[in-house]
Image (cartoon, rainbow, N blue to C red; front, side, top):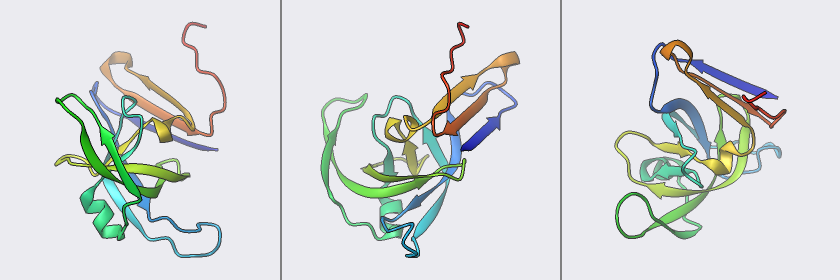
Length: 147
């Protein structure tokens, strides 16, 4: 089981960690997986799918497996390329076969969406105005603050 906790010295409005993005390959079959380390990946429970930048897709030499429409806070639907990737988390686990959609951002190269997050347990606390973010994979137990 992989566990990751990050302590912030203040209350934060976004959770940002490192991660890896792997090109699709047989990770267990001995094939050397091409990967890129991402310094700033945003964890976003409002994103149903994970996102990668065009820059990451280019570095890994990914080929689009299709197109998908996304609607966000702006008007209309943007149609973007999608790519098959594996995402390496700070827990040292790799979530495989993620269909990540391309997105444009100057701040992040990856958005970790619910397609990855739902594989584990996530908790965010803000005691004494200091944020603590914890994630474990696979899901191990229900977290219920009402008990």
